[in-house]
Image (cartoon, rainbow, N blue to C red; front, top):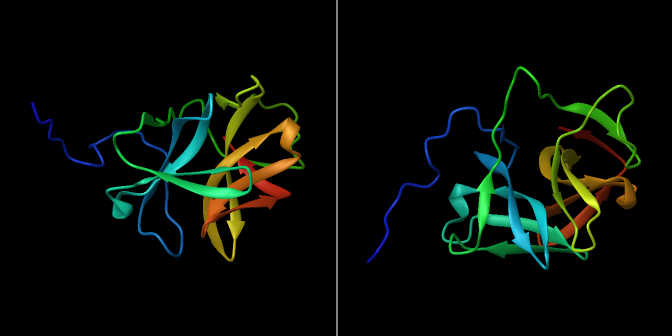
Length: 145
């Protein structure tokens, strides 16, 4: 039986990211290489809308790959400045996923050529890693959810 659906789904409270080059994207999570990795979901890139960074490269996946759109609770979540992989003092970041070795990962947004690009951050990474243009880019300064 063929399944049909609208993408992206009509989601209330999604954490959308709009940058200079892509009209609309969403932050999400995707199963990848034994982990659950923060990703960006870009509807205009259908049929491969899921993009994530891993091992220095940007990887794309189709809708047949397991992924989830992250939802926002505006009463308890916000983007806060971060630096060097250190979690902001007095804040409790939302754990988004994990590496294949169990290290926790968090959603990040960083500037890349003037665009706000979503990616991942973890204390073990020393900063944010954002996928863009086929590569994974390191950013010392970022925002974490």
